Length: 239
Image (cartoon, rainbow, N blue to C red):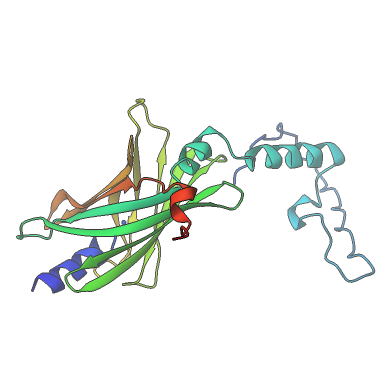
């Protein structure tokens, strides 16, 4: 019964363009101006480098768009905060199935910065009632919209669950996020909340979902960084 309740809960509870520099309004002419066709592909067969949507931009607009794109694609302080979480962790997971006392489980995780420090990839494994749950988080910060982002995938499903959250109003290390839970119980989705909490020893995640017409915390995960092993201790010693 517990195993079934845990599996259902995991499925039901996170199992866990706009122009950045808008152009000024320009009156529309009575007769539309002809649109210049995009440049032809080079003779060596490579595709043209100018994006399809840039064909109607003049040189100044194209330069501004390229500059804005470069600025938005550059990692900033919020990415640095996520990258600082790289390491190996002990994981403590608490599940709260409806009508059952909270259940405690343990596991491990490894956090790694990817895509030139733009995202933090967290691969975790936790043993739940005789089965191993392997999950993958992808944390990031969207410079275009000014939002923290989180995406979750796991070995008990074949789809992703995503959520986003604005910059925290308080400097308490807590980032509240909201998203749409899509699972077998709600194929069209239902709202849920995820809170990312930066801590001195790592980070915590808490998921709130609607269970039996009540909003409640259903999953909490605590990631505690393991002490790094000095290189001298990691090497085998001669007897």
